[in-house]
Length: 287
Image (tube, rainbow, N blue to C red; front, side):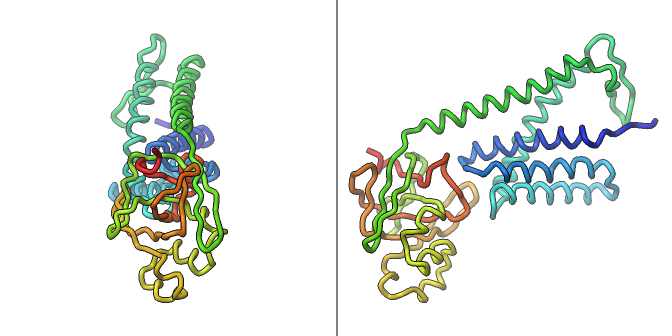
């Protein structure tokens, strides 16, 4: 039996679902991601969705390509170490796929629609799907997007704090949100650690110190000027992505909304923001 494939429609469907899935994944991970990354990644998924229809080869090969494309999409959105986001991306995709399967299952049961047996499954003849039901499918996706957007809005309504970091006579003003999940502390002194984005301290520090904070390479500490070596720290951290060392800084002073705090600052270079802010403040510093 001859089947007609509408590549543009298939691309748009895959693009929309991938965009929504990536967006929800970013919300769950509390990642602030630029929209162009979502668009580029979803476009890759849309192109792959069309190309997969013409892909031959063994099943294991097709599975490997599918996983590789998914990892690439997560790399585009989330940067390095995409394995944990990729696993969540698959889980979210399965959930949304189940919702859409249920919707199309209801469409198949509409009286008057014709079905044909193709590749071991009954499929509704596309011309028999009422326009109204197509609108229902589109509305379902839109409702999910709105719910996710409102969820993000509620998260964004979390009180915003002003963080002032002073180092060697220079100060940087940051915005931050309180995060009860940030239990990070410097292992020797036990001081709480404020996590900031890679860009947050760019204008505050000498270039060599700033570049080291971005790399966090322990071997490069010896190359720093002597007056800065005692101010830099390596802080072990554990997150969804696994264990890693964060490059930290012992500033001359840190204040949260005008109140002096005994805290360190650690840089997370692969994150561009925390719900639109520069810093994640431990709850112990927010009181």
